[in-house]
Amino acid sequence: MQQTNFFVAITFLAVALQFFLQPQLASGQGKMATVLSIDGGGVRGIIPGTLLRFLESKLQELDGANARLADYFDVIAGTSTGGLVTTMITAPNKDNRPMYAAKDINKFYLENCPKIFPQSSRDNFITKVKSLFGKVTGPKYDGKYLSSLTKEILGHITINQTLTDVIIPTFDIKRLQPVIFSTNDGKENVLKNALLSDICLGSSAAPTFLPAHYFETKDGDGKTRSFDLIDGGVAANNPTLMAITHISKRILMGKFKVVDMKPMESSKMLVLSLGTGTPKLEEKYSAVEASKWGLLSWVYEDGATPIVDAYSDASSDMVDIHVSTLFQSLRSEKNYLRIQDDTLTGDASLADIATTENLQKLVQIGNELLKKPVSRVNLETGRFDEVRGEGTNEAALIRFAKLLSEEHKLRPAKLRPSPAQGGPTTGGEHLRRSHAITGILLACIFVELSLI
Image (cartoon, rainbow, N blue to C red; front, top):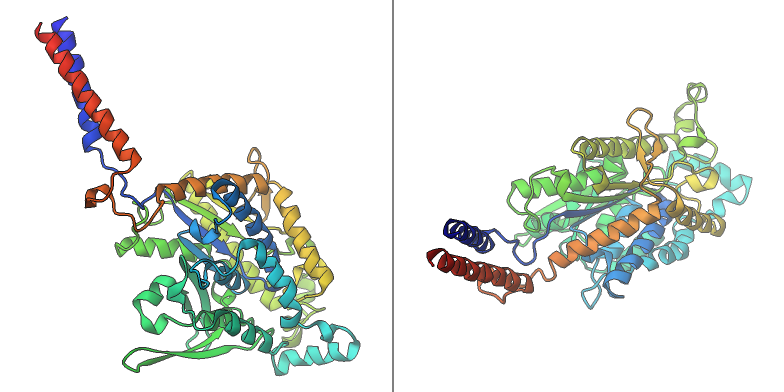
């Protein structure tokens, strides 16, 4: 009996010491790195805008009306129109909160797209012909309204001021290399701390549609850097992999502090990737037709731009295949949610059809996409196949909202000092200590019993 009591005492003491000695997450540190990625696609940005409105509404149901997407994602990446959406939900207003709630994204598109992509050129045959030859002599749209709009809204806000880390890819046509802008780079390198308006204009300067964008930055010593930018979709129309590698780079540099994880550790990543739709199932081009195309047909064919469609869809799909393979190989595929509609047809599949009818149709497509089943890219065919047992995209976003909310609660205040730094003790820390003290007391009792 004495020996039994002695061993019980040792057990309680071991448990108590474990409570005292086990490493605890510091206040402000969580378990999962969270990523949001938004593809390029012109007016089709309405589709991810619709999905984000739904996601933010679910976060607000969980955490209150003031919840915003920027509060929940460690990194938000966007290309071209996705870069505009990224900026809208992360640029600070005068109260240091996001300029736009997710519910306002589509309002912005519905109001401004007809002015960015004026449809007068489609009203009669003569202007259609002018548009056709304009593809050779200059961009289809002058970009003046988009330029004045972004500069008016964003003013002098630079990328280092965003409310979470953002990534917006562009392509420098002079140097023939991608230029990736990020909040962290902006904080560490003055010459990369460009105005958000300039970055947005550069990332959305789609070849044949909008003019390339030039600007310069200058540091305190007067040193300048010039940028000759076109659409980021040339480099990464789907910036998901870029966001993941950005986190991995920060980990290797010892600068990613919110989660204790290894580079490319997908089991500790929560990634939401939103496409802008594609006409895969329409099969609108064929090798028989393309074999007869010359320069003009590759840049303009029946109202579409085949060469732009080809490189943007190829870029997006390759990224999805790589990321899907990464997550599936490590058995963490549920941590990666890619929502894409590959059934677009007609005007809805184009980047610049800004008629009221088409814009409203894109809103409808976004809402219908919520009701479609979760799909995952087939690594053999490149098409999206339904994943049985995972429900609809709507259900998946609700699940993601809960995970994001739980992760957010693990880091309630990034500026709150952790107990190890002498700050206030959290409720979890009090509970841990009380368990340890209880264990020690029970150990003492059984030691006494073993001596009787």
